[in-house]
Length: 61
Ligand SMILES: [Zn+2]
Image (cartoon, rainbow, N blue to C red; front, top):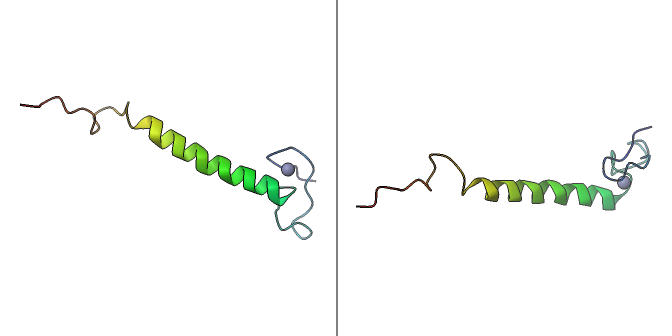
């Protein structure tokens, strides 16, 4: 029996469950938004501290 990666509840087999490996459509949505949100946050937070990036403009003459 697989377990839902979101809430750790047992999830039904793929043949009975269109949202496999999640237990419910709600858990599927939660996981999706977590991925999208996390990627967005990481991309944003990396920009200011990127070494040698566009932020390193020190030659303003
Ligand atoms: Zn779940």
